[in-house]
Amino acid sequence: MRLEPTRNPPPPTIERVSRRLTAGSIAAGIVLVCLTACAEGTSRDAEQGKRQDAERTSVVSGLQATESARLLSGSPEATTPPTAADTSSGN
Image (cartoon, rainbow, N blue to C red; front, side, top):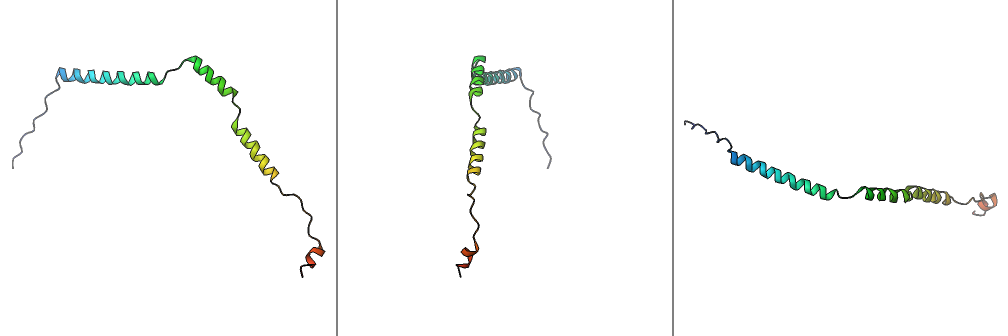
């Protein structure tokens, strides 16, 4: 069986290339618009956020203090050791 020669595809035309470039430019423009919309905010907003963060108290130090207090307060009271009279009465 003899194989037919394959035909190479024609080179892209100027219209096809310009269509692809236009579509790529539009897609890049949409991406840039979306990114700038997500990145809104001013330096005033950033400074206000820094001030709010500085005014917050540390949650970790409060948790550590609470856990330490719980551990230290959970120690049992000292008891007197049993005497010989207490152990002999069990017989």
